[in-house]
Image 1 (cartoon, rainbow, N blue to C red):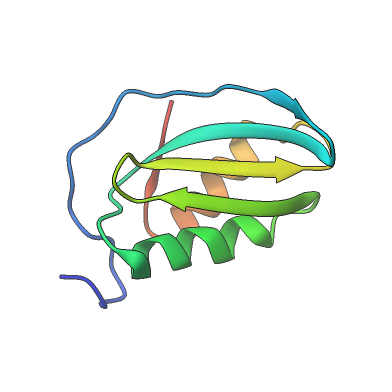
Image 2 (cartoon, helix red, strand yellow):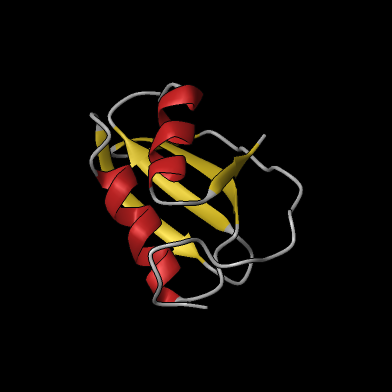
Length: 92
């Protein structure tokens, strides 16, 4: 149930990673499994914001898409670790 310290349950989605140039750095879209509410989005956003180089995080709970704007391309393992620390799974 939402609001707990554990991840919400949801179906796994197909991964979509689309790096694109952004005026303020690199923008990459990741798929994250397990998010179902605003609380989920907040936990994922908080963990990703703490990754060095991340400038902005936008989460779309309905699609599981997480858009990360960073100074340079991020290491996928660092992103996966941050998502896992929030209690969710990066879909690869």
